[in-house]
Length: 407
Length: 223
Image 1 (cartoon, rainbow over the protein chains, first blue to last red):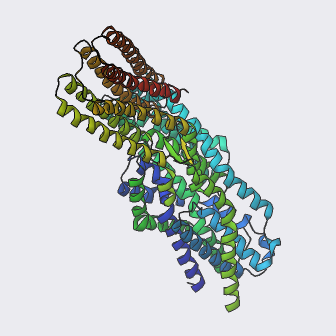
Image 2: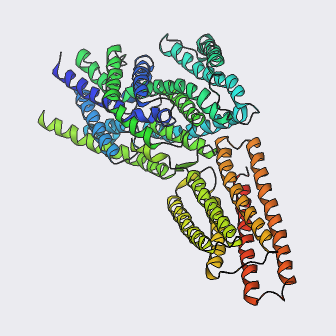
Image 3: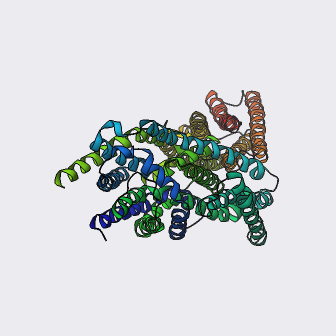
């Protein structure tokens, strides 16, 4: 195998490792914080679901990142893609490690896009960047937490109305929780049909795959809740709803969000790898090349390894620090964020998992669901929208220039 | 990672409940001191009155800590101002108890027999009021837990109603006590009269402040 390909794969794997190590808390933090699962269980669920999401649902975003931001026809030497991909991956990883270390809520997605823009500009100047596309992408970053917030606000209000406000919240939860799970699986089933079975028409996918999956999962979870929720009754309806029903439901939504995370974020690591791969093996650039499955698998494994080696520890800390989150809130956050992430991923928008989840937390907070949220994070997040691209681009450009000087 | 450890701030309600516990303890200790006073155990009364002062200090410390932790950057289920005002009111309950304790300490005086049952009843009612405040703030936490469900709000209204009733009762006792004192003006020295009236005044302040705190809970739970 070509040395350059090996190098790109190695760095892509490292990037995937970073995603697993640092970003996993963004998707599993609520479930661990609300004590629905232990950090160990979170690691196992996140590992499996991230891999599944990456492997089955991970293609479309890859295409967008690779092709959308730069005009490929301006790159005359296809090998620029190889060096550029390396530079972008390195830059994104460096910036991520720096930012995480300093507690900044930066996004893997934003970093890698910054890295790609950076090497593009270093190679052929500002004209190579499709700025219209960049504006679109940045808009999607601003919109995704807002959508997450709106959705979480509505979901929590609905949970409140249909369950918490009822005379017997536990009884209401046993009926409504399966409905929510069913809805999640309508989305998952639809995605599966489109991505894996290559269905073309959305409504056909919804009817043929989404709705049946949702109904089946809804019925199964209804049956399971009937059997298992009856044993321990503390007598306090809210404690019972949180612990007996939603703690179990949250295990499912945690898997849901891990799946979404994998499908969305794997592209950040393997998108550039796929670009380099196409050039090295086929000498092609800028032509639509399908991402080989094994590269997706490698990305998925990289994320899983990152989770098991380091993300696990991060989740332990998160579990200890978050003490105020309850399961209905965690559920509302996870359900909303995962749905927004999956839909964005389906639309090919490279959004940030982290920011969407933070947006969802804010949404539940606006619905007066969380006792206290630190608003300072929102400011940090907004700053990160404007800082990440330039900084990652600068690092990437420097690395790219350096490589070109030596080669 | 740090995003997650920073995103969720600590709930102000746990320390508020803790503060309420200490407030209840202040008033309970005062009640014991007054009992000792009525039974003529003045040594014990002094000891307990000093204890009231110490417990009140503890309440103050919790109050300050909580205030410091409630930065303007927090987004909460209940507005920060409401919580700060409530905390202030709740703390006033302990302050009033401390005021009474101060009177017990500045002068050791034998209370007239006619006054004793009234003072004892007022003191007992004050303890009740403080306990109801404690219950009310626990209920407020539960209201948020339940997502502001009407049923839980109803329960809080009941507790607040109790506090208002207690306050009214204490007020009536206070009036009665004043009448008793002035009926005996011949027998009492001015200092004794001043002493008794002020003990009663500060005692009735306790449930008065409890009522103010309850009013704030009403504001907090409004949707």
